[in-house]
Image (cartoon, rainbow, N blue to C red):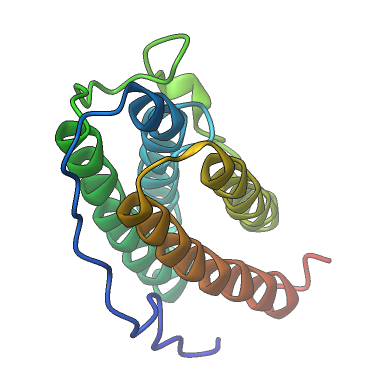
Length: 167
């Protein structure tokens, strides 16, 4: 298995500079933070997969754990942006509280990796929609920087799918 060294870009995350409250920004970030296709879901899905795959595929489990840690960083930064914008970072999307039913519990390696790739591609699509709705330049920069990490994750999952002959 390829030894992945990079799970996160070496570009710095921008400092949040939020000087006024914005309900628009809070609502725009909510689904990325804790909606169905969110950082919350990614953290839980990769954690679950690392637990069940650890015995047979310890290297893959470690990769999933490392990616989950990056997603936790994104989660924390989005929560901070929500708080600074005047919102409450409850674990919920715009329309309902987050649920474990959002996690893809695929048991096989190939099914899990394909679900992970789709999740990362979905996250990038969602973040690009979020960018169009945001008002604060600092939050826009943050979301653009998060997308860079998600693109790294896409490349990792594409390579893993190839290595496990899942295509």
